[in-house]
Length: 159
Image 1 (tube, rainbow, N blue to C red):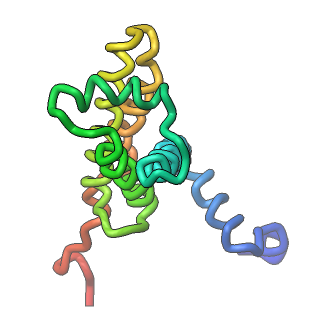
Image 2 (image 1 turned 45 degrees about the vertical axis):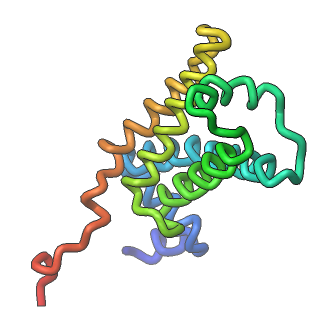
């Protein structure tokens, strides 16, 4: 790299990382999709807080959850205590944080999307678009961010 290019290169590590991702459009698309999916994790925090009883349960959330839990006789709070951490850990795993493997995190988030789709469909079939979009974004990650990149093979290292 020449002195002029070095002077123009970003000095902050975060800016260098952003520039590296912008150079590769697939990585940029992956970052964009993961950013959208992070919203599921933020919603999971709210779900967890409602399940713990720190804030009142949202009536709209309860209406969407009802078709998913009533046939099995599952109470709402335990369902929220299961769904909330599943969303938080699933979203964190897509960025490489937390105890879950990316594959399990994606499956958990897709399960949440399916529950949301079914609940919304039973209330108003026209309100399922968000669930379909999030499920599609999660599915696109199987192509954009393959799970095989997570596995380091012992034979692939050159000594």
